Image 1 (cartoon, helix red, strand yellow):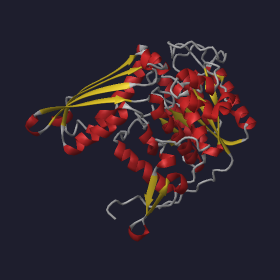
Image 2: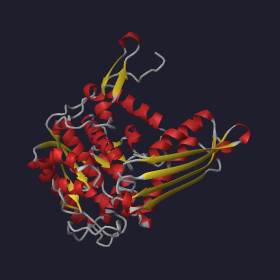
Image 3: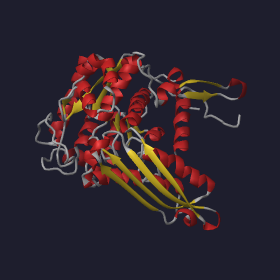
Length: 433
C-alpha cells in the first residue's frame, strides 16, 4: 500500500466563508465557537463524533476520527469571509433566527468581531437579493484580483498557516457548461470580457482561492468549480476541490431509501418531492433560474443508484418530480414531503410517505465544519483536484465527464472511511474479520 506523506496541521487555519452573514454560515461559525469552548456539542459532525475502525482480528481497534486522523483542531480555526450585506456574524445570526438568542450570546463577542469583506456579486445570477456590500470592478478578472488580495490580507492579519474557502451563499441561476469552461486558457480570456455572461461570481471565488493555494468547497448546486477549466486549475495549483450542494435533508433521505429499494429489488414508479422553506435561500429559490440549478442537483440522485439501464422492469419508467416553495412563516425550518410509489411481488403497488420537518442550517452546519477540516487534510496530504471520497457530503458529487458519481450514502460512507484509513496507513476495513 502506498504511504501518504501528511504535513502536520501546525498553526492557524483560516476559514473564509462566502455568504458569511447567512443562515448556514452563522450557524456553522457560532456552533463551532461554542463547541470549542465546551458550551455546545457538534452533533452531526463526523470529524468530531464518529468512530473509525481499523485493523483485523486481534489487531482490530477503533477511536474517534479526530483522534486517529491528523486533523486541525477547532481551536486552530480562524473565521472570516465575504457577504453582500455588512452584517457581523452575530447580527446575521440574529436576523436568520436559526439559533436562539441565548445560544448566540454564548459567543457574542467573538461573533460580533467577525465581519465580512465586500463580496463579488452580480444581480443577474441572484435576482431576488439586492447586495449593498459589494466590490466594484470592470471585469471578472478585476474582481478576482480583489478577492485574491483579500485572501492574502486575511492570512497575514490573522497569522494563518493555511486557508480553506467554502461557499455557503445562495444558489446562483442555472448556467450550462459552455466552450469557455472547457479549458483554462479560454476561461481566463473570458474573465477579461466586461460583458461576460459565462462566468458567475462563484467562479471568481473558486479561481481566487486556488490561485492562492487554498482548497475550495462548493456548498451550492451551481456550476462554480465543476468543469474542466477549474479541474485544470486545481491540478496546476495542487489544490483539492469538492462539491456540490450540501446533502442535508430531503436528498439525504433519498440516498438512504433508494439504495434500500435497489438492494431488495423493489420497483419504483414515481417519487414526488416538495418542500416549503422561508429563509433567504427559500427566497432566492423562488426565482425559476435559481430553482433550475437546485432542481438539477436534486434530480440527479436516483438514476445512478437504481441503474435503470440494467433494471428496466424495475426502474425504467420512474416519474421523479421536485418542488421548492417559498413560505416565509417557516423561516429556516424547512418541511419536506415525499410520496414514493413502489411495487413488489407480481407488480403489486405500495406507497411510502416521508414527512421531514428539518432545520436546514442545523443539518448543513456540521457538514461545513467537516468539509473544512477534511479538505485541509487533503491539501496537507498532497491531494489535488476532485475529492471523490468526500461525496458523502454532497447532493450532486463532482466527477469527471466520463464517470458516474456514487450517490448511495452507504457506499459513500465506505469510500470516505477507507480514504481516512489509507491516510493513516491502514488497510481498507474488512467487515468479515
